[in-house]
Image (cartoon, rainbow, N blue to C red; front, side, top):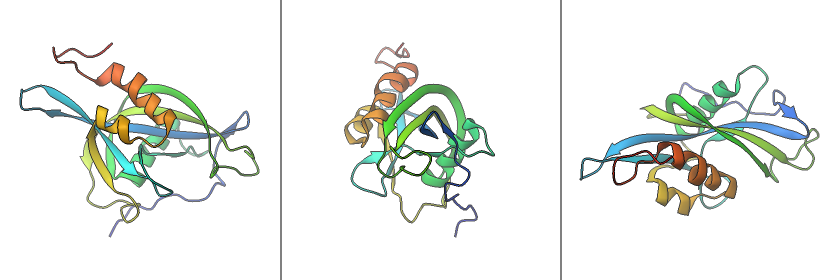
Length: 171
């Protein structure tokens, strides 16, 4: 049983310029490979609405900072806690499920962070509806459901956190 409860409803949601504001993160960890090199693994979760995997994200609410919202979504959807290491950027997309009276066209603006995981929970609010998988970045790119998340991973995250065969961060 999980003591944590996921927030629901949209009465506390933030909007700006016709967009619903979202917060999310790319949870990651470093794992040693057989060659004693650090390999970056990212945590992806199954989608509740179709095939493919995604990163935790959700509505940024009025009573929290964007950083708090990103961390909350990681706990609720993926069952992980960690430290936000870097702001990766803003990503815009259109969502059919996010259409409402304040955002009839379903436009969304997501603030995405890189989060180094320091705790993996055994129980979390969406455990019964989500699967989580630790993947290498190339594996995650292939399985990523949404183009905007793939862009965040491939362009912004990889350049800052992935290590090449010589042991250097990609810059």
